Image 1 (tube, helix red, strand yellow):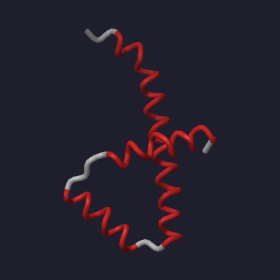
Image 2: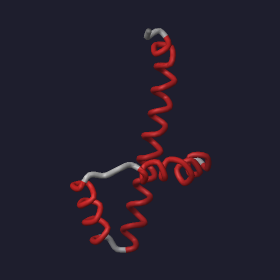
Image 3: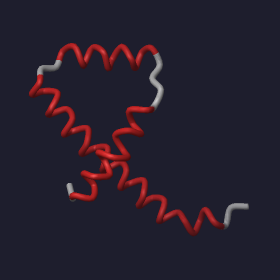
Length: 75
């Protein structure tokens, strides 16, 4: 992951993801995971989450750029 993507994750992507509302079922899954992981596992989970979040962000950018012309023609 490039330095730019690490910065984007730390300053934009992560805060956006964490600000999303969770329903009761999702909250339960997050709590169960938080209670089961040790410190090293949490660090690994954070690294994996950062990787996939950045890849999803990049895919969104690429898709938006590819569809930009098509979206302009929609009335």
